[in-house]
Image (cartoon, rainbow, N blue to C red; front, top):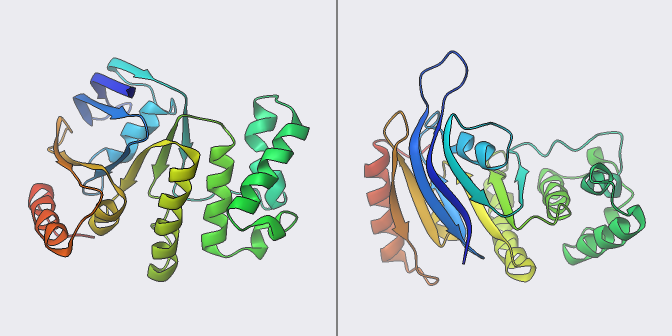
Length: 234
């Protein structure tokens, strides 16, 4: 089942040359799709268009409900953890009582229940990202648009959160578009990778990945992706 379809979508920032030109792709239910490419290629702009943050110049988008999670956690420093994750509930004018109940359920599931009444300043970077992710989950979206959510974290924390993300998604039954410049991260997390081509962005090179990926497969696929990007991994 397709949960998202882009048909010949184009985009340009005001006063600038076209950044995205007639891009088409789709996303399946429960699929983890990563988009990789060099800085400035348009990969983050794609999910901003899908999420309604930017408006395409032309083309059509057919999508189930989406939620966008930016690179920075953007937690409000004056609100507690539970207060931050309830923001989607408040904005959508839904029951705060039910939202609080669901929020505490997610916090417990993701081992953060003891921090519910803490302020963001009391949390580590990895914990802040988990709180931001729970806030994204509370939108009850079908598709999660994750824009380099782990790029600012140290390698050890990043590895732990990658494993945590896969386990969490398996339980909560979501489809994901994940933006990253880290090829190793994309290979570890994804069912499919789209590598950005050209500028303006008008095509992808696609890699479908098996659930079980041995070391030889990872090394060979990484080499191919690096050649497609036309540079070294950042």
